[in-house]
Length: 126
Length: 126
Image (tube, rainbow over all chains, first blue to last red):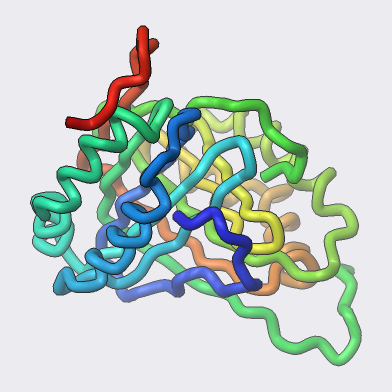
């Protein structure tokens, strides 16, 4: 959820289903005071939740942000959802930082990952 | 999935569960020839799938892209998954456009949306 330029990275990989995803899509408001610090704190805090698997984030400059959190089971998500510091951050987000957002919580039924092999010379599709 | 700057937008809203999300997180390769045209074609094509609900996309410049497609049910997703033109695009994506990606297909159990009311004066968190 950081606005810092990110080094080229790989997305979080596929886990063995079932697991949970929380998809959080946002448009931010003009008021961003305190957002960066709180966001960094939340990124640290969620790592302490047993069953937390990882997080992906993408941010179109001036546009949509999407954060996807991965959790082993519904209990892990419930624990994160009920965290007092997280709840305070959510409240402040609604009051200040977000113009609009949508949250979708879903149970993963299938998944797969792909990583490109080093190509000796760029292949072309036939 | 466009690289064009996007006007401020709202994320796709919450639907009545159950519905499906396909979360597609990508890091693109150096080879992007033909990507834009194919991507635009896929964005058009998916709209013809009965049960397609919408799509969100965010792209960190030089970093991660996340596309989330929303579908009414597993049949809608299966239809999109088996579309011949889509399959050809996926194949080309693996050969050329993607360094790595992960796909998570999940059934939404709960969701909610938030839209900020016009604030007469910016409220501060108490």
